[in-house]
Image 1 (cartoon, rainbow, N blue to C red):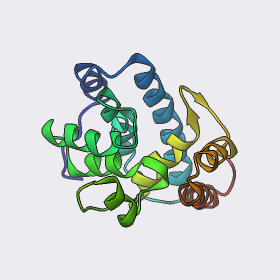
Image 2: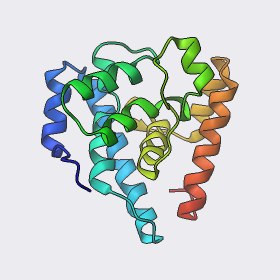
Image 3: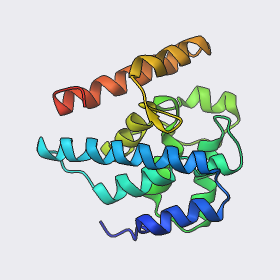
Image 4: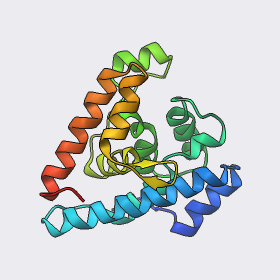
Length: 176
């Protein structure tokens, strides 16, 4: 990959520079650990994955929470990443990690710029998957996330999260 990715320490420094709350940084570190475990499990199955991109993307996926804790943190985070000169691959992970992806019509209703907000690459899917299995800074079952989305009256997002979970677990061949 020709893109220059920041190191783990540079990514953590970026979170601190943007005054990300410590609980958000802790969450990002737990998501990163799970994302890397998932990436390694998929690599063992013969899939080609950029683990460095997964690591940096997972560390920075919630950088937008330095400004907002709403769903808009994905777009805000992508803007922060862009202004920090981060590669497009990292920006894509940040803007595509929420809700198992945000459809074009949902993005329009949210007033987001026209773009793709659904994870496409395996690296994007791994970070979104790991994020949905971490509640605050602790691992949680997928059922907790799906139930939470259902209670918030977001059945479409709950279904996308379930599909993403099933896609990744079927690629791994087991529940990690």
